[in-house]
Image 1 (tube, rainbow, N blue to C red):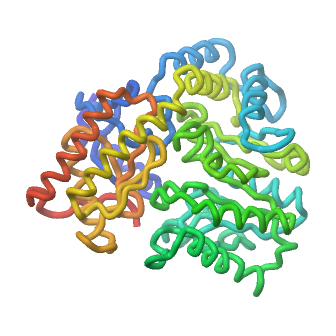
Image 2: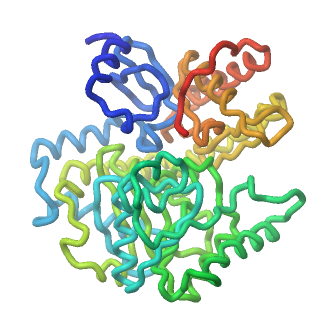
Length: 445
């Protein structure tokens, strides 16, 4: 079979560097639940869930059985021409689950990226307007539309422009923008004035098609939008006939302790929702859920993909929805997430490098800074994830200095306790001065 390094050496001869963010030198061979095994037989607790793409865990028996059963019948026929039973069933289920008022329709894609592209297309078609508004810190994907609305890494615009025109990025109300002693309301209203500035100087509201936002930014650092700010921008959209879209690719399907992260904002009712990643347990399937009137505005082949919504991926997605309901994973995410948050908050009292703890369900980040300051410390964060890996768990960083915590929602309580103890040991060793030597070059810029 080969060792981790021998396989990586072979791959390096042919694999484009733009396709992988470097973390650890392993080649994964198998997985079950919240556990992964590499080709050398080393086992790891997965605290990443394949970038939040395996909320129901690895190789869940119900999902595996659904895939096998459908593969015996029909693997692929393009929904661009003909329907299949699994696709029909999933369309009905997603429409019923959508956090959208009124009749809903569904459009399928292959990834969260093309789902966010589709939001642009449907919004422009429905409104007859061209401008698209997104936010700094956003990660919407890597296709040209979604990378144009993203603003998280210079490498997502460096050397690949020009990007999609008429995309305006607003400042996201991140905690780093907040002034000392500013209340939630004061902060939200100040950031809302910044949001309004383009609309009063160069961006005509009547030519703006859609505002898209992640209710909780994942790659941006696990940042939940202040509720008052969300209500203000939503009302602005309502007042000006601008569609309101939310990206649930990372944070949906129970990840945040609710089925959809937008449900943390009870007064907001989006027009369009992008989902993907965990929808089919990591198989290539995404969807846009939208108000029927909006979705009817675009005609075929305006959003057609040969393999989107194929029989195997839609069968897998229905099995995922079964597991989420039958195993009460939304409630489990909220309960175990609260337990993890309590643990991390206790760690923060012991280790001053933990500047902030932000958890929403089994989902969030530990912000690592220079002790007793708010200055990001990417080197220390990197040392920590390297040691956590050596101790048997997979954890990475976002923004360079935020430890990403997103285990599968099926993680057992014993596995969660073991993972938390691994993380605690890494911090203990850091405090004791044992994490020294060259800093590994891990993560992205």
